[in-house]
Amino acid sequence: MTPNGLLTVRANGPDVAEEGTPVRDARGLVRGRIIRVFGPIARPYYSVRPRRLPAAAEGLALLGSSLVRD
Image (cartoon, rainbow, N blue to C red; front, side):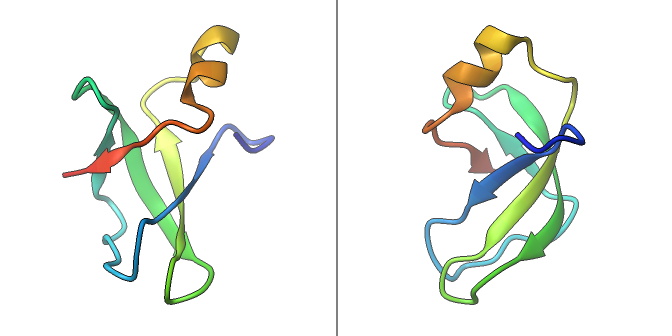
């Protein structure tokens, strides 16, 4: 999580999602939307604006977990 409240997520491969794409956690809950794509073409990063700021415990649970785009 960045200081301004965004999540930084790494893509699994070169298949790039568009900005505005919703992302979900493993339970299918929408966690936010991609607002920026950056980094290497082979495996870019996404800046994700969460629907709401996660509590400290939720933020820790997100570390290392997978998010799935729609």
